[in-house]
Length: 389
Image (tube, rainbow, N blue to C red; front, side, top):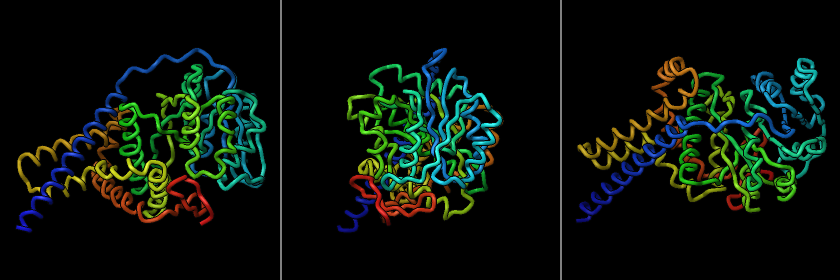
């Protein structure tokens, strides 16, 4: 009797896993396809002057190419402000090279070692705000590359007074071997589609450091960057603070590229654990259920518990079809034939990617420490603040 009861429970769990994983991946695939093929909103011809704030720290692969893309904006008037803590920071060499290449561009450099709170990126932003001249502000990470119409796209929604921040998603660009390709798949095939799905269901509980655009008066109303000085998830918190002011968060149609440079499993795992533990700290309930998004191992476990019957095999086939859509859809964003062939080369990696993601998802429950730019930090699950580890 007990064994019969246990068998029923295991089959029920298996059916739940199969149904949940299939539903999740098919809805996500539909959200990605809808976003991929919908018509873009026309851009305004011009916008008010804007300031782009770029906190920098050290040299990075493709730093020159990434920063240069911000000098190539088809925008009438904008200021670029770069900030570092150390006058010997090698990033300054790249900035000065670009200054010589684009002598007519309005550029300011701030070198200030002052630390405000325990978030060094936010400290940098506090320091460089002193020279920001315009009322439209765009915060952008150093490791992203943007298209020439980027600035016009991200600031356009700020013309509406009820918009608090505009943020945009990013796709990965692998700069190494297998581990960087797996890191790119994490971004393109899990993180980005999950945001599309949340957005399709009306959620606006997000803000991404790749880009946040807002008005100066909005920043002042939430307490300035000083309000974020002790926050790990400073981008998420900035969006949350603006929503508390009754303002909307807009997900821009613009997407940028971010570099994935890890050459070792340990480096990739450290980076993704930092992301997952940060997500867990700000949205613990939804994070707990994200395991159903890691399709291949969840489907395999569901089949092991239910057996290879026709209904379960149909569910598995539907789930794997949706997973293949997620694998290929993002690579059709530009130059479809070439990117499709490139995707075929990495086809065999997506089951490995799902298994690794599930493992890291579980590991994220087992600690609160993360590593970022050589620092070890401790995340408070309640407040998402960090303290010296």
